[in-house]
Amino acid sequence: MRILHTMLRVGDLDRSINFYRDVLGMQLRRRNDYPGGRFTLAFMGFEGDTMELELTHNWDTAAYELGTGYGHVALAVPDAYAACEAVIAKGGKVTRPAGPMMHGTTVIAFVEDPDGYKIELIQTAA
Image 1 (cartoon, rainbow, N blue to C red):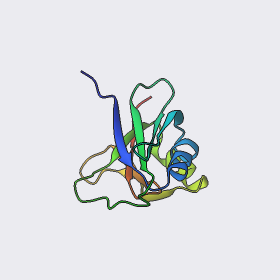
Image 2: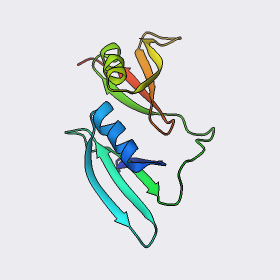
Image 3: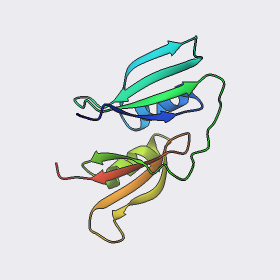
Image 4: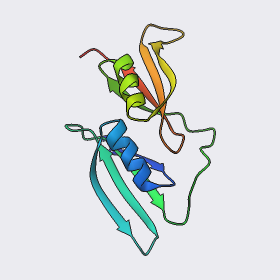
């Protein structure tokens, strides 16, 4: 077995695609409309990576409550400080600047997508 994708429900699909593509550098791999169910699925991913992020837009729902069970999506980055600078330069929101973990040495940061979902940036060795 292997993980195929993680799904997030989003209120404005184009806004979310723009964030994941233009701010975080993912590619839109495919987008399918399902008129009978009144929803659209868009699959985003990084070049060379098989894992995908499924953005689900239910046409009649403009926003969702995130709830208390959701944590975050984590992305590996070579330089969390530079990644935060790039996110800010592209209009994204950094909610926890890059720096060492409180109880460790791993450098992390958190950014937020347009729907309020948290994305952790974890600095990893190249």
